[in-house]
Length: 320
Length: 147
Image 1 (cartoon, each protein chain N blue to C red):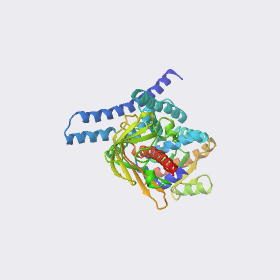
Image 2: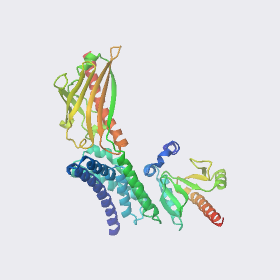
Image 3: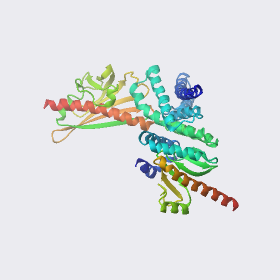
Image 4: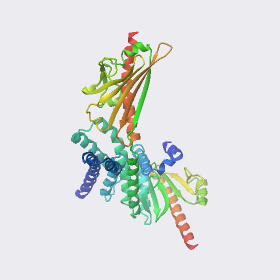
C-alpha cells in the first residue's frame, strides 16, 4: 500500500468519525444553549424546534453522512466492494470504541446501536461511491436536499411519547399467595438467561418496600448495585400495585436514552385457583430512530418483567 | 424471498427518502457475506458497463446502481445481483421467449426484463442484454428527435 493511498484511507476514516462527532456535539451544544440562555418560552420553543429539526442525531442519517464523507476521500482509490466493506468496518468501530473510552458510554447501548450504525453507514458509503464517481454532478446536488428533508422530517416527527410494555404470566397459586411477593420479594438466585445480561446489561435482583401503603418507598435493586427508587402510588390488596419511579440510577446505559416513569403489577384471580400476573412499565425513549430502539427497549423491558414474574411464580407455587 | 416480499408488498416504502438505499445496502452486505461469486459478477458487470464512454452510474431511486445515458435510464442493478433493463415490449417478449431473460420481477407486462447475475459466467449474457437495452433507448431517442 503506497503512502498516498494509506493517507487517503486514513483521511476518509478520520473525516467520517469527525463528522459524526461534530453532528453529536452540535446537537448537544444547541440543546445546552437553549437550556442556559434563559429564553422566553416562544423563543425557547423555536430554538428547541430548530435544534431538533436541524441536527437531531438520527442514527440513520448521521451514519449515512459519515459513510458518504468516507467515500468522498476514498473516491480515487479504485476500491472493490470488499475493500469498501472492510474499511467501513474499521471506520465504524472507531466511534463506539471512542464513545466507550472517552465518554463512558454504556457498552450495551453501543452494542445495540452498532448494527444500525454499520448498515446505515455502509449505505452512505455505497451512495458516496456512486455520487463521487459519477460523471454528472446534478445528482450530487439533488441528494443534499433529500437528506435535509429527511432530517427535517424525522426531527419534526420527534415527539417524546410514553410507551407501555405489558407482559403476563400464569401462576398456579391463588392471588393471596402471589400478592406476598408482589410488593417486595427476596433476591433472585437464578442466573439471567438473556444474552444482553451476559455482555453487561444489569438484571433485576431483589425488591424491598417500606410496606403495603400508598407513599411507601420501594427499591428495585439490579446487579452492579443499581437501584431504582420508587414510591407506591396506588395499591389495592390482592389486585393492583402501581409505583412511580422517582429516581433512576445514573447508569450510562440509561442516561439521556430512556426515562422510566411507572411500573405496575396487576393480579387477576382465575376461577380455577390460578392467578394471572400482569407486569407493566411506562417509559419514554429519547433515542432515534424510534422504531429501531423501541424494539430493543421493549425486548429488554420484557425480559426484566419476565425474570421478576418468573421469580414471583416460583416463590408463590413453592409455598403451596 | 425477502426481496420478493419487499418489492411486491412494501413498494410504497420506496417513496421514503434513503430507505431504498438502506435496503439495498442490506442486500449488498448479505451478498458479500454469503454469495461471493455473485458479488464478483456484479462488480465485473458494473466495471464492464462503465468502460463504455456514454454510460453513467448513479444511485437509483429504488436502491442499487442506475445506469444512465444523459437522463435516460438504461437499467439498474440491485444489491442481490438482479439486473433490470428496459428493452421495449417487442424485445422483451422475444428475449423472454428465448429464455435469455425473465419478465420484470414487478411489472411482467412492461417492456422491462430482469436477469439474475449469479456468477461471473453470467456477465457475457448480461452485457449482451445491456447492449440491446442501450441500443433500444438510443434508437427511441433518435426517432423521437426526428419526429
